[in-house]
Image (cartoon, rainbow, N blue to C red; front, top):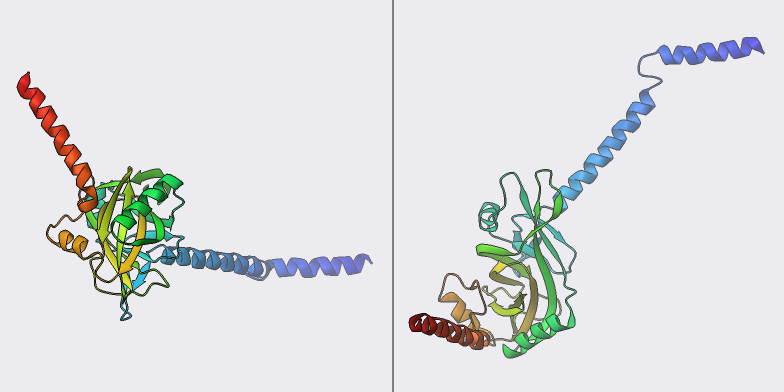
Length: 258
């Protein structure tokens, strides 16, 4: 019995002394685990490089910055990342992440969006939340967001499923700080919607028969900055503009009277 035990111990000791035999399984396991982790990390990085929007002709447009999208709408921020960082004030060494999800806005917000859509002659198809999150130097989001840019950036999104872009026009209703703004589709592709904005907030896709949003689109092409920094630039904003002018007049009158 003792002899058998001694032989077994001798064999085990011999295996330990042979280079690479006893630890081979451990090394292989570690390598396999590392490979899996690397592959998963690569997949995550590949998914986070941005959404890809496909045109009616099959051409693809990718987002210029990392994008996290949980909605069914493909969204690509097409302004170069360097320009975005400049107008968003992203600190050196940090980066921006576009976060997209189906909006869970409350009844008042939804009513405001619906009213804006009706005033423009359209109906709401979907509502999205667009956020611009700032990642620290380690690529981690610590809760910091940018809601206002110093200049507009361009977005291209996929047209809503079930709505024929050949017979319908699209536009966006932006709801920011209680103010709704109509942003017309700036391309002629029935499969995509292109718009510019300097706000990150709630956006509703609206649709209407061809030609419905013609006036809005014509107005947006007359100025380079098609999205104002305050209020609406289109007919639904006229009452707000009139009120602002009246307030300014009262202030000037009071200053002259003093």
